[in-house]
Image (cartoon, rainbow, N blue to C red; front, side, top):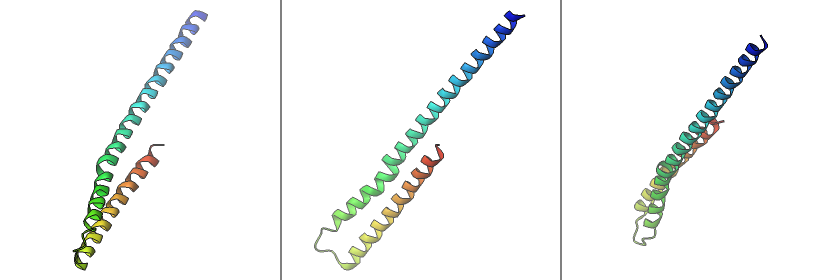
Length: 99
């Protein structure tokens, strides 16, 4: 009877160990997937508006600009900054849901 109990205890320990190892692997894969997603957002969705803002700023160095052109550039800068802010909020939200 003691042998059967010992075998059952060993089986329970092995099953528990396997479950813990699988859970750890799953969490690692999930972390990797979220990291890749955040890297994609950073490299594509946040850097694009930033590149647009930098391009617009370089256009404003032209001394021949009219007031209407300057206003249009600033509207575009605002639009791109707003888009970047939205994407950064999205990243923050994703980071907060990872915990």
